[in-house]
Amino acid sequence: MYKLMIGSVVPRPIAWVSTRSKDGVLNLAPFSFFTVASRNPPTLLISIGPGVGDREGTVKDTLVNIRETGEYVINMVSSSLVESMQQSSADVSSGENEFELVGVTPNPGKRVNVPSVLEAPIAFELTLDRIIEVGTDHLVLGTIEQAQVDHEAYAGDYKIAIENWRPVASLAGDYALIKPAFSINIK
Image (cartoon, rainbow, N blue to C red; front, side, top):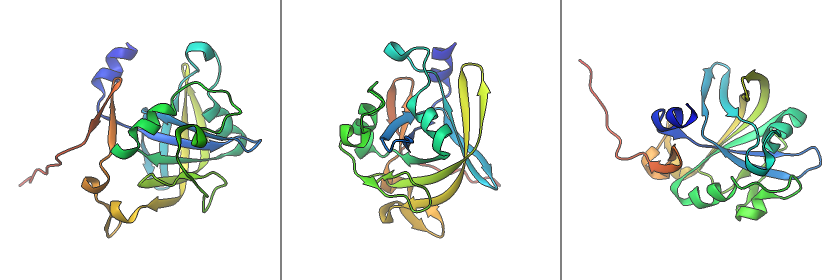
């Protein structure tokens, strides 16, 4: 069923989540079970599953860090960051700084004690609202405290210039760019 779901519910945006452990170690991991949960208060949702492979049956570092600190950042993935994002999905020890591992720059948070990815065109600083267990997974709801938008990605009037930052979407193991955009006029 998992393969049917991820191959059918497409394209999915990628939340590239940065966290800091209680010991100060930076973690970076992508999640494609991600969406807007509420407009007021502004809330984003990621779904974090259990560890896989050598870490089967464990809890992912991202979830541990969010539980312990109550803070995290969702970085949006552009086409220029897709390789670094993919590298950050590797299983590494909890003590390894994944910003250094994948070669991206930590950008200090303005409202949370977690850095964003400086190279990301858009980043949302969040505080934990709640975690809801659903089967084997955990729905993590976070309230947006600060949004950082690169000048190139900003269209003005609180709008995003999608064509300028080229978002990457997940397609059941492959990736896609969202282009070209089109509108429908309803009369």
